[in-house]
Amino acid sequence: MEYAPAPQSADHVRLEDRYGAFVDGAFRDTDEYFPSINPATEETIAEVGLADEAVVDEAVGAARTAYESHWRDLPGKERAKYIYRIGRMIKEKSREFAVLESMDGGKPIRESRDMDIPLVAAHFFHYAGWADKLEYALPGPGRPHSLGVCGQIIPWNFPLLMAAWKLAPALATGNTVVLKPAETTPLTALKLAEVMQEAGLPPGVVNIVQGAGEVGSALVEHPDVDKIAFTGSTEVGKHIQKQLAGTKKRLTLELGGKGANIVFEDAPIDQAVEGIVDGIYFNQGHVCCAGSRLLVQESVAEEVTRKLRDRIATLRVGDPLDKNTDIGAINSKQQLEKIRRLVDVGEREGADKFQPECDLPDDGFWFPPTFFTNVTQSHRIAQEEIFGPVLSVTTFRTPEEAVERANNTEYGLASGIWSDKGSKLFSISQALKSGVIWGNTYNKFDPASPFGGYKESGFGREGGVHGLLPYLERPSQSWQAQTPTNGSPSTRPASSTSAGTSPEPKADDT
Ligand code: NDP
Image (cartoon, rainbow, N blue to C red; front, side, top):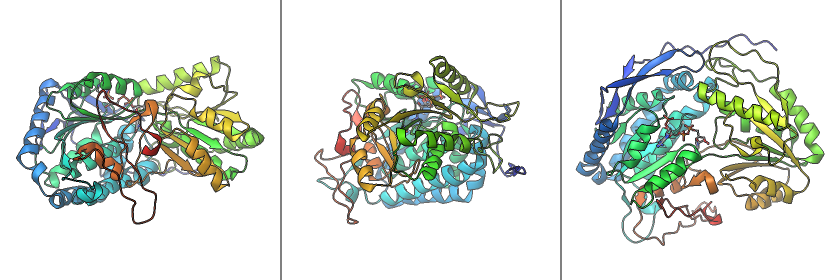
């Protein structure tokens, strides 16, 4: 079917040509600037101030002053007013945020408009609600109290959403923040800084420093930071954990994944195919919890791959600002090269590649939806995180084999199970080593629901009551969540850990 173009106008996005670092409530000049480019056109959108060590130091100093002079002592209900206000203003400016997110990061406008930005606002609303209820959230002797200055480092795949996941609980619990967005997607965080100014958030409570890994590293090493919250690759996460070993700084890590999407023969196949597509091609596959390994029961493997082939032939790759686009631009040239490299490895190792015919734009960074069959467990494409729209398909015969294959990875972030039988969903999910498990759906997020990993996918949880814990000093380590009155089972949240003592979450942590 031919679609007429349905472009979303970018006219209402108000942008400065240049943004400095956001320190102590104001944008300040920096010595150097770097361009933030649109990955769909390779054009510069705006220039952004590169923070050096002195700027990071200034930002941490501003956060410390704001923390000690008022923010930590502000009653929760007063903090909540600011956080609600920020949430409301994001909703009011949601279209501008969505368009800018798609321009800066390459994701389809349908996703930034319908998923990223509504979830951003929802996170602020959710945690605003917790700010004056911390004692109820964390029962036990003594009052829970904040940690101090938090350094937060986020990746480029969900720039504003990752900022919201980090900022909202930190502010609700009375901490102040220095945030380091990814170098390729700095812009929506800077618009958020404008919102914070407009919302009257006291200067220094949130500071934003921009630049590449060195800026994050300077933040990690700063002696006056009390906690680091990092989302990004396992490689950098391990490095940070080593840097912090032996210090008193708290650490939470949200790292990579290689999610297994398991389709049983009794699953509703057409729905499962939609779930497979959503699991791997959503956000160009730049998703830590992507269902990048499809495990399909042998008896339905031929039917599933045939339907998947037909379905991905209908996906539209192209302009992220077109409302009909399913797959937008790859976030950066560097990421495109990584995807191409691993796809070449897959072919060299003997897997069979399928890619539909599609016309890709001349400028910008693009990769068509792809899947591999004839994949074995030892193939690199079955083990390594590609972080692109590339799926590896393997088969299994029995539920036991499915579990063994699904758990045969160094990661443990997310999985999906597709089956008509509720009992099978429950028994398989008990056996999977994943922080998040979806049943007959994939990639569903909610601010009230905790998210985080096992094994090399990190530790600590974001979202819900669990997401408060990494930002609070608990008066008693014997704290245990009470059974909620809605009858759902009691949970024991994974703790944030001091660096160097990082136990893997136990089975009951999920
Ligand atoms: P990176 O680990 O390279 O970067 C993440 C952030 O850390 C960026 O802001 C980056 O800066 C910064 N950084 C890089 N090096 C250092 C360092 N030495 N010290 C401190 N900060 C540093 O990951 P990507 O940005 O490439 O993101 C993709 C990865 O993130 C994937 O592996 C994905 O699975 C994972 N991820 C995990 C999520 C989760 O919740 N578990 C969610 C989203 C992504 P810069 O980019 O400017 O160089």
